[in-house]
Image (cartoon, rainbow, N blue to C red; front, side, top):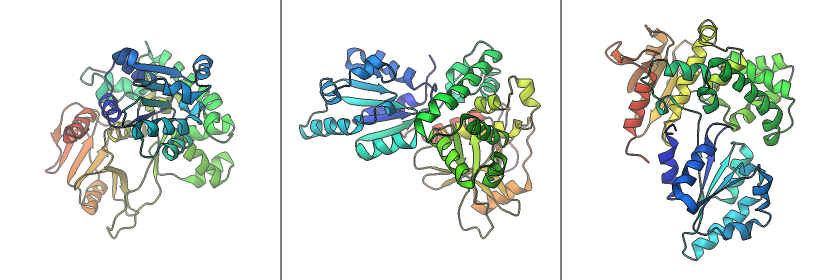
Length: 397
């Protein structure tokens, strides 16, 4: 069993909130993490999968059933299938509080959507914490083992894909996952969108992995309106399948790019959308650089404290930083991402660092050694920079 970074954070939240929502795309490991808690707690926990009719039937009278679970952790998987539960949970939690009892706790699992976040936020405001679980991250595996990071990059972090016995099986799983999401899962969350249209949109985003969003070009390619593109993108972002990285904003006196960069969040899904099934095909594909950048961005952002801010910096004059991390209380990291064993930074990176007054400057590359490139720029591996972030915030919960 792999150790997940979210385990400690989940324990911490459950010790402080009566309800916790564990959110993430399907098959990222939410149920496994929840069942691990069941094993540890024994009869002090109960797990209900609301996609199973037998478990859903137990909640025919949810207030009666859940009130009877006093002192237990109640895990409700696929909770979006029973949106009417949120007011009931609020009533049970508030009744326990008024009586001065700790009562039972609730762990809610769901494939993240705007509706789920809104429902839980409105009904359980002040009573619930939200925690995102990503697919596997590099530091959750064995990063010093040769080939581990390349395997994660090619296959992505979904457990069934990463742990597949070979690349062909992994690729087949991801193709089936995409088809299932488009035809069965996404229609549950958002307005009806033809599966083929959404697949083409998703594929177009994969082709432009890490590029600045050009909504007009996407709209022209799909023969839809700009409003439709915005709606499709909002849906994919809400489901934690696509990331919108905002541009840096500040008073530099420069003309800044104002559109976000867009990434398909899992590199394995990026490759499946583009028909890339093995490492040789990936290394020869034009998306190689953008795909590597997306992998690095996702792994680093998963470790950020809530008070941090992540952006990118680009000006019309050519100054550019792939990733800017603003970390409390007053640090600003400039990160360049290179898929090269001998990375070289451009003049635009130096200009960007000066513009934003970067306090630390990094280049993430696929090698394993760290070394100074200049007096103030250090080349590091992905896992080394992840360790820098983790150690910096090791005292935070």
